[in-house]
Image 1: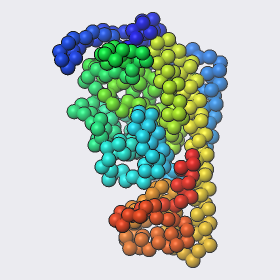
Image 2: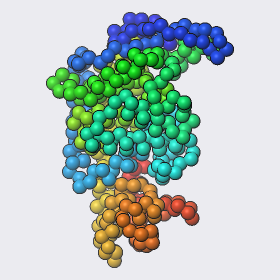
Image 3: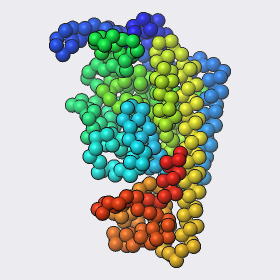
Image 4: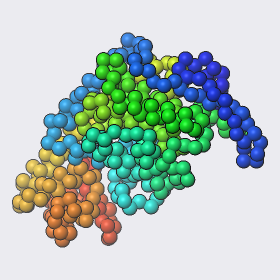
Length: 399
């Protein structure tokens, strides 16, 4: 880490750290310790506040649209998979979206795909907590991190707990190849220990506190995300958990009543700006640049989510209208269409469970909808064959 960049940091301090390399050679360096978040908003430029206002308007439009739909939860599964694919790509794990949409959460052996699908499981767990009014603490967040790592190449002995080891982030350009990682890093977060655990707990309390009248919810979400990434409390998965916490914090603040928002696609397309803006808070206390960037990302993500939600609702209506032109009259056919809109690909067994009917009945109904062009086989497997509504998948892959 370039210590000179952080020596005059207005929002944090440098603390000495030391250790030894695998061969036993000792090293000494510095880590950055961000200040606890204040109870008042940082000073921001007028332009930044305009971006915050745009983000609030876009989030309000998304939430209003969700509330007008009969069942906005139908669109949550596909949104989570879009977010899972993008947030993993931002961390260097890329899986084609078509493969992510087709994967079973409970039946993935490939470690790379497992890493992506684990995010879906983690997000579903976190959203279920939020919906029942359950908050989250450092231990529950650590449990989510353990779930995120399970079955992947990043799983470690200390997965599921606040990291007991020092970690480093990135590598600075132009650093000699022989330089040790701790000094070649772009950023060195706080050392492990009781202080890190206490700061994480304080941050979690801050994120769930009521800042009405003092800090705009969009600004608070930007501040919380910065602090979480600066603390980097886990050995891996901090980026994915941090971006999940953005949605959870907006949900907790009442800005969103349905957490159907995917933020990572926008950040992934601008990853250099994303990391630079975060670093700017640590080195220069530049909140305006970071909050403006963050707010633009929220606005664009909310608009994209609303467009996708409306497109899926339109497809849902079209498919039911198509159904009316057929000879199929069972009510389960309409339920199956809803299921297909909410689950981009599915098996007979999954449809059978969702409809509460036997496998033979589900298979017969699926075959009928395939015959009329409403559904189609997704692959050519003999066992565990999957089906989908092509129009639904078209919307997801397009957006």
